[in-house]
Structures are given as C-alpha cells and as structure tokens.
Image (cartoon, rainbow, N blue to C red; front, side, top):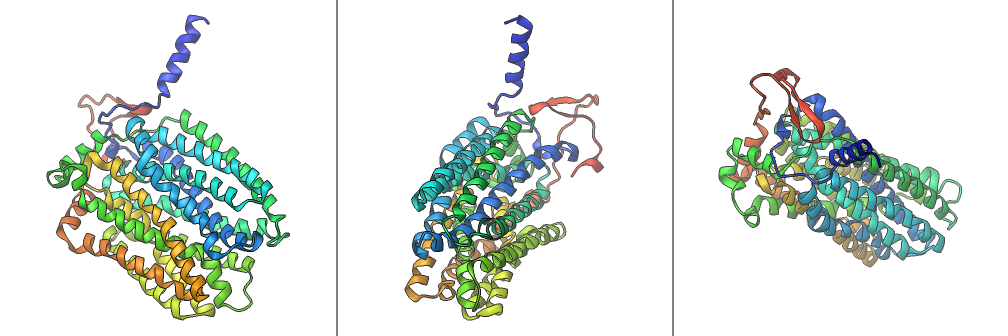
Length: 476
C-alpha cells in the first residue's frame, strides 16, 4: 500500500475514533449553528423508539387474538421490552457511554435495535410468541442503550437553561412515532387480514425495513462529527453554577435527589406503560361495539393527544419553570386516570385521552431535573434514571393480573393511579423542598458561555467542531 494511502487511511480512522478523553469541550457554550446537526441526528433516534413503543402497544392486543393468549401472558411483550432497559442503562450501555462517549453508545444501540428487528422474521415464520418476546428484548436492549445516551445528550448539549425545552421537543418527535406505530398497525398490519395469523407476515416485512434503516443510520453516526460532552464538562458546569459546592463533589451514592428521580421514573413509566399497553382492552370493554382495529385507531388518537401535550409543554417551559409545568401536568395525569376508573363509553375514552395529554412532559422532565447539578456523575446518573424505565416491565403484569381477576380493565386502572401517586412525591419535592428546588433553579438560570480565544482566532474543538468569535445574540 502506498505511503500516502496508508497515511490517509490512518487519518480517516483517527478522525472517526470512538474513544473520547475526559477533557473540557465547553458543550454548554455551543452556538445554534453548531448544535443543529448533531441534535437533529439524535432527534431521529427519538422517533425510532417512539415508533417501536407505539407498535408494541398495538401488537399486544392483536397477539392476544392472533395467537390466543391471555392479557397476563401478553404483558410478556412489555416485560421483555422494558426489562432490557436496566441491563443496558445500568450495565453495558452505561459502561460504553462513560468509557467511549455518546457517539459509540448511539452506534451500539442502533446495532442492537437492528439485530432485534431482524429476529422478528424467524419469530413470524414460527408463529412463536416466545420468539417475538426474545426479539423484543433485543430491540429493548438497543433502545435502552440509545436512551441512556440520547436523553443526557439532549439535556447537556447547549445552554443549561434550555435543557428541559430541548429534551421535551425531542421527546415530542418521539411522541409522533408513538402515533405512527398504532396507525401502521391498524391500517397496514391488520387492514386486510384482521387478527388472522397471515397478518404476521406484514409484521416481518416492516421490521426488516426497520433493520435496514437503523443499520444505515449507525453508519451515518460513525461518519458524522458530533460534539462530545465529557464528565469534565459537567463538573465544570456544576462548579460555575456553585451547585458543585452542594452536590457535585459528593460521592455518587450520596446523590439522593438522583435516586429519588430514579424511583419516580420507575413508578411513572410503569403506570404509563400499563395504561398504553391495555388501552385497547379498556376501550373494547367499556365502549360497546368497538373492535380491536378500531381500538388501535383510538390509541393513535390518544397518542396524538400525548404528542400535542409534549409540544404544548415545551412551549410552556419557555415561559414557566419546568418544575412547575411538571407538577401541573402530573396533577392532571392523576385526576384523569382516577376518573377513567368509574367512567365508560366515550366519557371513559376522553378521560384516558386527557391522561395521555398530561403524561407527555413527565418522563423527559424527570430526566432533565434528575441529572441537574450532579456534575461528574451526570453520565452514570442518567443511566440510573433511564434504568427506572424497568417499571414498564413490572407494573403492566400487575394491572393485567387484576384485570383478569376482576374481568375489568377499567377497575385495574387503580394500579397506575397508585404508582402515579408515588411518582408525585418527586414532583412535590422538586417544587417545595429547598435541597431539590435550589440546584434545579441555579443550573436552569445559569448563562454559561464557552471561553473564546482573546485574539479572536478560532479554536479546534473535539469532533471537528470549530468555535470562532460569536456574538451573544447567536447563542441559544
């Protein structure tokens, strides 16, 4: 091989190396222009897992009919999907994130997602519910890996004061995916074949297309130059906002606010997934004449309410402190879920639609508030909060067991209510307990600017991002 070609090849692999050192990159001072492309790429990931989640809720009910399984057994899909999350966020994904950085974690997550999607093909051929659960577990592993990196990346890339706004807008795109999933399930999977076994063939082809797409996206992430945010960056941010005096220098196991946020995420996600997973059951039981296919359409409408809530909440956070918006929205979730227990028909359906509307901002806001001000522990802490998603594997089986025992999904909605009440403790704490409220407000009100060279020369930043002299008006 000629020396020039060898040198060029070495430069290529060095430029796209996945290993990142723990040095300050000033991510909080990135300009709008510098954040548009990397955040756009990461936002695509949000749509992917929203689509997968929306599709999962539709397949849950149809598998009950197609494969002749009970509500309790069908909850195995949710258990497989969300049970994989803590293995990723607390295990290998968090290790990769801390050792190699965000880009490597994105690539790993996309690869696992693609492998799981490919596994749907043999599961469909064998008409095996266990096979579908296994494939769903691998998909959940991939998506758990993506969430471990994407949520903190959105929160910390750019000025801290807009962290909740950024993550909620990205999650709004995820919510669009949750609408597309049920629509695809009702109009494509089961339009001609209904609940027959033949409908599984369409499922196979859709997941094959998904696999091809995510593998291509993994290549794009490898080639793209996106800024990395290191532990040193987050430690510097905590020090600059004086939050480090309280929390940033403590050991990880003394980050009590973080663990309360993790508990709240466990309870909240468990309740949310339980409602969405048995939404179609609720509608078909409480609204006479409603078929599973029509129920899937109603689920798509409910997810549309969820999406609208995300965008509305994001706009509100531009003017109202995110912790206050979070408290208001979670209060709405509690009120309307309680109402759905005793109502039926269109009224009960409306109550659940409103519950989904108010659910919208809760998950991303818990993530953003939970990792605020914990400095060098941010990556590890984000893994714990994302690991709280395992609640989605624990709560739905409880709801299903109660629904089977009482033969009433409406009555079983009392289970999500209980878990929402537990999650509500965090919303109250972050609004009324000074040790919770003050760190959130300090970081949120900070205006961190990246240091610029005095001579006006641009400085080379990690990931081939360059920062020249930029006016304050250009900053987000």
